[in-house]
Image (cartoon, rainbow, N blue to C red):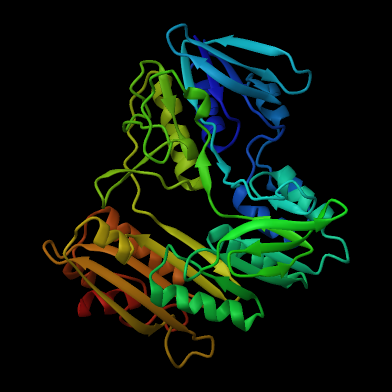
Length: 443
């Protein structure tokens, strides 16, 4: 059985390892456009800021492991340009020598991930303008951060933009965030993102909001400014972090069905509508258990799970992906910020009759010296009393509460059922009534 996997990161290699263990008769070929396999994309901002000393520390397993230990034909610099679904062939270009290649398959897994969005801004090819998606991207940024690079502009105030801004500021740079939206952290409700904004300003990050980037200026081939529809901003370096889009262009003409986001539509077994073709990870959809429909939420946790499930099913066993509830957590200076389930805007978009409350609580007992404020927003479906969303922000205790709420939402618990949860308590760890249960009682 010839198996071809497009993409050598989380989803692709999770699937490859399942196949190598379960199907000894499988000949597995992985086609990776870059040179690095199985790396931690989420750790890239921390390498830029120096918290992670070497980029190699972000690599879970080198390509040599897959070749020598798992018997996988793990290729590098092999860019796939098209797929012949009827002839069951993958076509592409070897970027090292420019030669075309063709690989036959019996089963194909599309695990090509997502690429950074980079609009056609005038001057986008100037030196000092960077994207951040891969280890080579991060290495270029670090190499470019010379002593005279003091003023850095980050375009985009989402997860990556905020984490990059934090790490650059900690490294002693003057940082500015430009975003088209009216607030940073726009995936969160306003009460949460306002607190993120306060934290940014407290650490002297300049926020330029509701402005549209139009072009970059520069002298001698290097960027020296960013121009928006309302002004211009001097910049020694620019990092563009405005989002990602699925790498699925090479599927044109195959008949594979795509989500409006461009991600490959898959069923619970990671199958596409074309027999023998599977997809997983940041290039595929994830079923959202609250929305009860396919969604596009590209996160490493989903990619690893989906890749494993794809590999198990391609090996001839049966396992279904159970869906997501939209959980995430991030650090921003002294704060942790978490989200699970729906935001208030998503609840409105889904036409749900909901109630929502925002309230102040405490991470641990108020009399303990390490206590810190914890702000929570909790939302329920009025018709079913089920918890459908929660967000939290504070110096400590955020991740614990988000994970409790994520578990409750995953299993469709009502707020009354949440009151009855037996959650651990001792003054250094919690309050007698956990903050999540405090909200459940009040909703």
